[in-house]
Image (cartoon, rainbow, N blue to C red; front, side):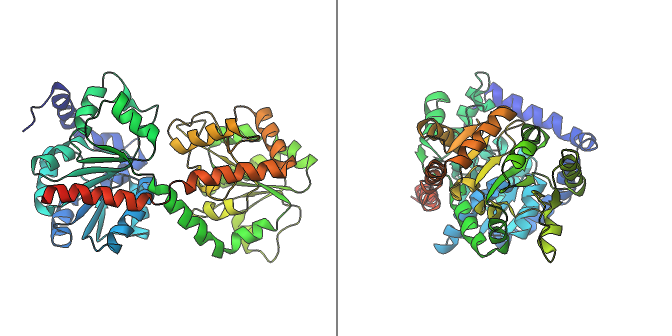
Length: 439
């Protein structure tokens, strides 16, 4: 039995103080309100599901991105006959996405991190292993699993350069947390170095790869059957895709798009907002009109008898189309990198498309890798864009040099291809941890 450190005592006290305040905070956060609503009668549901999952493998994937990383692992476990399988989610988006794309015997929310609830659930489910995907590791759950001898494993793990877990005041707590893991599988050598050399973790840390890349490759291949990429490829000579954008990303491009479209009659733009609500789509169409650009929403353009010949900019007003859209891209910009951090650059890279993004990329190891390649190639597999003139210059260079653009795209694709086999390696790591328990 480990002796509770001052940091663990402080964490548990903070949980006890914070949980009663959540209903009040939910009044200010629709997302939090959805999460709390989804957790009504949660323990009753989870305990009732015990016969379906007892003695199996429990994976926790907090949101959509982590669940996409978990899906190749779940499929590999199914292939090997390992089960039953349960997946918990923290965020409403993750839970709702999994409901539409189930891979396990049970999907539901993760209870809030009360120590008593975690002990009760572990006693009811009695899993052979508990797996966290990427970095959403709940301390009371980890401690409860350790107390009953359930091996805890991290797969596709990441410790980004900007992570608060590396802060000197928090480092001892997280070092102790991760030392309770039986195995830690990480996506890259840089992540391993940060876990071992910087955080000081003594649990086994292995570079098993990022399973998200395999899921991206699957989506890329599946999009070949979609009619939209082919239609976009026939729309103009060259296409700039602005993917997963927020207003600061659009502010990078609005000042230069009219000029770029004016000087290049064959150029088209596909703008994919991160949250394509009707209000947001209307706002973007109005912004394009104010700047003299002929624009349309994708739904009307795609469903019409024929595309209006003068449309130069499409605003995508549905979700789930971006992987296919990148197949038709000549160049791609990925948003989020002027706010909290860049969104997935793996999708355009899988399509062998050179990628641009803003300066905040420390949250994504693959974006850092693409940028490093960019420093070593003529145009770059990945390029940081900081202002409108720089963005316009980047695009002009790409459009004017097809051979260099092809080399940069091939280098970007290589970043994704390098992760092939991550699911098999991750499952091997998990089975090794489960074998240690049985031995």
